[in-house]
Length: 215
Image (cartoon, rainbow, N blue to C red; front, side, top):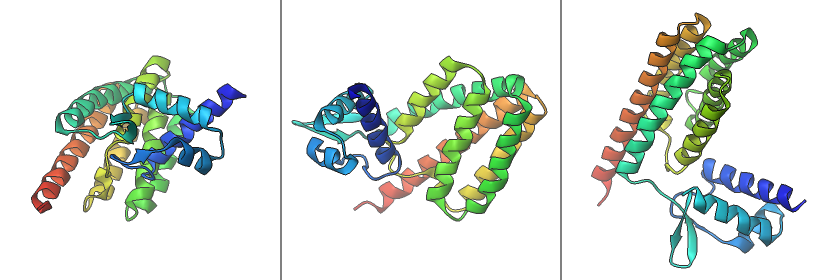
């Protein structure tokens, strides 16, 4: 039961960070988290230790806060993500079952209705990418991409919030799925690599605007 509670506490805190309930710089307090999630403080404490080990939380004096990424860390993360995601797309084009490809196609079609809702589209985007990871049929790659996407939660905003980005991203998703459907390994890898590169450039522009607007 203790291990189950710890796993639940870890997942719940991670999801809260991912959904923006706790944002970079926010302080996490054991007692408040235990009350919010309805578990005892021991699994919360162990979950916080695990998140700190994964660099998702940082120390601020004696307190634990949600970590944030500086420019260099963000650039490094996107480099790794671009290469791992493109590999996942390549392997998905090779190994995905007919049913998995159909699910990807349905996701793209359903997500087209969310382009005016960046928060909902961001959640759908994570599901879409996760489905590609699973379709790669490589457990070690999936594990590494899970870590990358957990770290992505430390970014305070989504690139999908940029004007027009939702529509463009959906068109990019469509191109990725078409390549996977055609079992075009090189095409799928390139389509996903380009997709991540454009998302990174969009985020860099968002950050540049934010710095300009800061007093």
